[in-house]
Length: 312
Image (tube, rainbow, N blue to C red):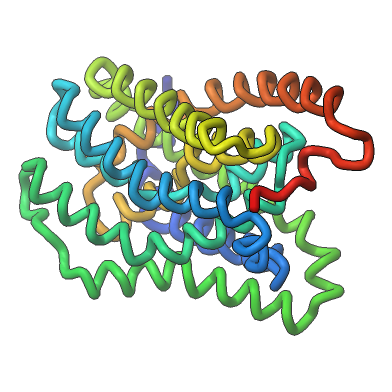
């Protein structure tokens, strides 16, 4: 308990300084892993990419609004869910997809595209949430252009820098991308754990109100990705990929928006609890996914593994 109290003293630094820089490093790492071929997959996998984009850009925010309105939670918790639901997948979904041995290239493509597109959609949903849920204080609807500039600086600029470095130093970037990805993932996990520990009292205060809401959002999000992929008859590897892409949100981005842009730590309780719940459900599905892919491999011709099948 004493350690947690000491961490709480550094909460402001972790939330407002460390988190944004870790997000920038995450986006640089994602940019370093991107090539022209990643964007060509929009043509190669039109159905999978289209479903992933629609589910994350439109489906998830709508689900967040619906659950926030249905559950009897304080406005701050409801607004926190809207922020979380508006944030797309990130490198965390890539890690779970890799662990499942699913379609990692498709996952990287979707993460890149949603990171770009949601820079323009997140401000819309945040302002809609602020008008819907009275979170109190002086926080009202924020200028769209200012939020767009902030998100561009936090996400798009680092992503572009990573892509430019990859284009200019392709061989070096290829060798460096995996060590950088592992380092960035480790830093991201550290800042999420430290952020949760530093704000543990907030989590305890809102656990009863937000716990069931966060778990429901997490399970339904993964179910949305899985259900849509099965409905449109995607290969099993892509079904697994869409489950993680739609179901695993970018916590680092949600933290940065809450602490840096909105400057309201009380709105972060939902994301903090999600950071505790999501790894358990995601790892459970990793085990399920391995069985699904193994069963699929037994019925696929040896020369046509499911991960190579297109959905054209």
